[in-house]
Image 1 (cartoon, protein in one colour):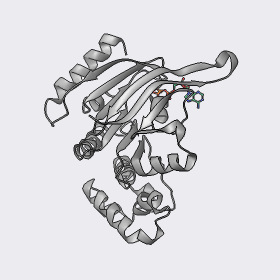
Image 2: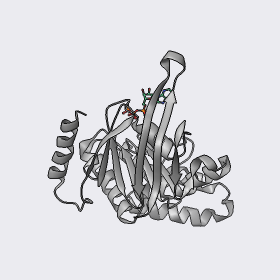
Image 3: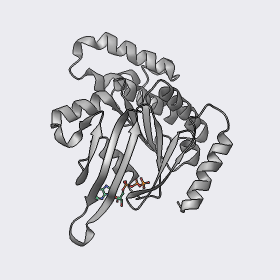
Length: 252
Ligand SMILES: Nc1ncnc2c1ncn2[C@@H]1O[C@H](COP(=O)(O)OP(=O)(O)OP(=O)(O)O)[C@@H](O)[C@H]1O
C-alpha cells in the first residue's frame, strides 16, 4: 500500500529553559493513501501538534516527514506552500471565513490564487461540491446567515476544491450538535470512499468509530492503535464499544 505520509521519529518541542519540553517525543506514523485515520488522546497529548507537523504547517525539531514521496524538510517555502495548497485540505472546528464574502466566494477564494482566468470553472466546481454536501441553495448567503453545520459543510467544500490527497481535520465536529456531527461524518465517509485519505483529531469515540484506524496519544507519543474495518454504514454501536473499550484499556 502506497504511503501518503511517513513520519519518522518526530520530535517537536516548545518553551525555553525549565519550560522546555517535547510535545512530540519521537513519534513515528505512516498513513496509507486513501486511509481514514483518527487521532485520540487527552488534552495536551500532542494530537494537533502531530497534525501540524505531518502537514508541514510546523517544522519539526528532529526526525522527518515524507509527504507523497517528498521529505518536507528539503523543500523550499514556495514548494511547501504549493504542496499544502494543492495536495492537502484543512478543516477546523470553526471554519475561518471572511465576513464580507458570501459562502460561494469564501469557498473559492483560496483556489483563485494564480487562477484568475478560471473563475467560471472554479465556481462550477464549488457549486458541484456545494450540491454534493447539501448547501447548493446557500451560495449567496452571508456566513452569519447559516448554521454551524452548514458552515462546516462550506469548510469541507473549500478543503475539497483542490481535490487534495488528504484532508486533515482538527475536531471538525467539535462545535456541532450530534445530528450535524453525524451528517458531517457521512460526508467524510463519502469523501474517503472516493479515495481521499482523511486524518481527524477527535475526542469523540463516535467520530473515531467511523474511521478505520485510531491512533491513541499520550504525553507526546502514540501509545496504542486500533484497527477496524472500513465503515460500511452498519454496526456503529459495536464499533463505538470497541473504541471506548480500547480507551478504557489504555486509560485515555
Ligand atoms: N505554539 C506553542 N507554543 C507553546 N506550547 C505549545 C504550542 N502549541 C502547543 N503547545 C503545547 O503543546 C502541548 C500539546 O498541544 P496540542 O494542541 O498538540 O495538544 P492536543 O492533544 O491537540 O490537545 P487538545 O485536545 O486540548 O486540543 C500542550 O501542552 C500545548 O500547550
